[in-house]
Image (tube, rainbow, N blue to C red; front, side):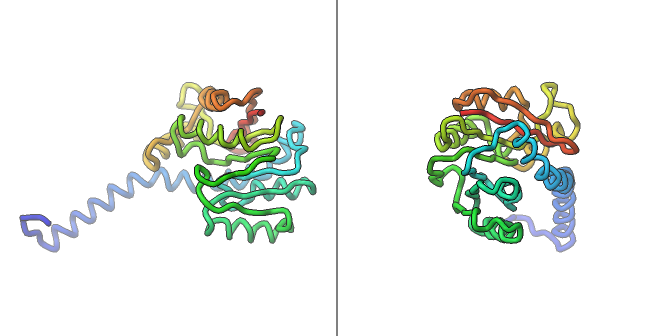
Length: 228
């Protein structure tokens, strides 16, 4: 409580100043989220064909960590009648994913794990683990811990695929992935938009080999995959 009395006008002025400051800070993240969401929606249609074309999905069981709307995992199930998908996210979010799986006609091959990706037991026997738009929320050591956990859940020869905004080494191009690092600076404790070199280092330190990248057409996203 302030020792100096304030008038209603002063309180209103302070509220207005705070609101304007908050608006300036949130303007870029909010605008970026709108654009990024559109491109993420576009990228779901490219992810599965690119991995199929590279002959990387012959396995039966895949897991989608931080599944969100579930569309990435659902695309795999739609394109491979043998695929079974396990989606991991918070319980309320998974209700949306399950509804989307039902509408896509793959609900019988779409199961869920509720909870934190850092705490839930994934189990084993996966041929593919999807980490879509997730690693940029955390620092390098945290991401390496998560990648090691995903590695341990894979069958021999399995893959982990991430979908990320990947700037060039100069960190100022391309514009959208580079700008995304500012969004992470203002909206996370330690997140960042990582370069391919940085992501490759995380994969390598987690035990992966043969790391490859696939820029997604018509999107600022890049698929980065590592082989167990």
